[in-house]
Length: 466
Ligand SMILES: Cc1cc2nc3c(=O)[nH]c(=O)nc-3n(C[C@H](O)[C@H](O)[C@H](O)COP(=O)(O)OP(=O)(O)OC[C@H]3O[C@@H](n4cnc5c(N)ncnc54)[C@H](O)[C@@H]3O)c2cc1C
Image (cartoon, rainbow, N blue to C red; front, side, top):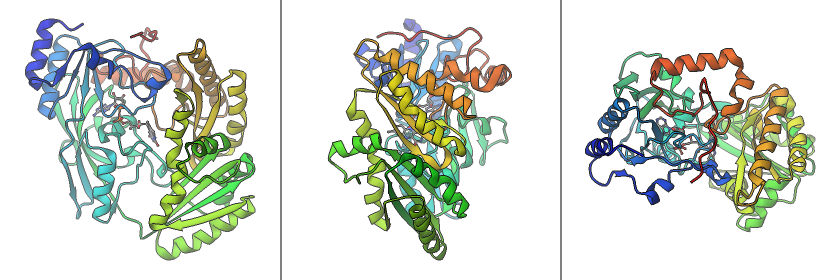
């Protein structure tokens, strides 16, 4: 509970109506997209700053009183990272969404932290430019949240993640100082640390991103397989054929059934579906299209369809529908984003259903096949006794498997609180110590997102019930 004086001071920074403390308002901020799996943690207040100065003043007040601050964009994160593990103030940045401008000559876009990712895509495309990072949540997520999680997406295979595009930012550090970093500001060690920092080092209030020229041609191929292992073997086959797709995506049979059950999209009868997107010069894409078609057929695809322009949406529709479709199967999902080396993908997809069977939780697998970043998703109903525990146990077995395969616990969603207990297993004590030192350097009092991403010296909080 916030001290009344602190609350009054915070209210004075953002103005009437922009600080919420009523229980009904706070409840909406007790979870992010991971919350469907049952995690709830209440903040003491939610502040809605209008600009960088207001963010700075709120952080100063919180720093003076040792009140935790939880930066938050759209709350689409899948790891319970934008939730208050120790109370304090959720800093909702979605009012800061009006600053969005493009410099065509310089191929740069500047965006306030609360700008929706898709708005940035549209502005770039209208100018004949291209911003490749495309999380599946792009129509909802904010660019500040994308930076904080180093968001990726289907096109990360060829173009990389948000970290590869950020060239400048305004950040408010834990003492409330406003720092302009990179292009248009000072050279700084902090800028390259922001992507993936999950709100633990600074609050990002605006960003400058580099853009690419839009590809002249783009074509999508969709291939249906009667066997999941054959579908996974496409990765090596396409690589052997010298193809670097812009995107290479997979849906297993459970994912296809989930989409089919929605009745909104035509789904081919198959055990697995692979989508390949090619981008580049007209002539290159045309030649690659034929190579990819032949390669997919040789790999055992029963149907290969291809489309370009607006018609390509027809092929992407199945992939785009999958997250929402899976959510209709059961009320909760533990949606992991594990990564394994590409030559170990087959072992991951073969073992995932066995893990689900062992813990009696249905499992659906889909995602970014080309870079071994797959969303192994366990379905649970948190209202049912034992389901939450079974989901967590299945996730633990999955993490165990992934580390044995030489992979990583997260390819794009981050650590949040959901994977905090596993960080040391992956990075080792020295890796965690380095994270702590960086955290302590930028946030010595530990007020920015405590209990998120960086394992504490004394850890693991039990989930707080609401
Ligand atoms: C349907 C669906 C599909 C998804 N697909 C993908 C995908 O393909 N690729 C992918 O990478 N992710 C994906 N995600 C996960 C999620 O959308 C991303 O992590 C996204 O970047 C989060 O943005 P947000 O604005 O919702 O951030 P939030 O969820 O609000 O916050 C996420 C983290 O960032 C911190 N944060 C937020 N804003 C700031 C800021 N301005 N300054 C400092 N810290 C901040 C928060 O404290 C928190 O730790 C998906 C999620 C959903 C629901």
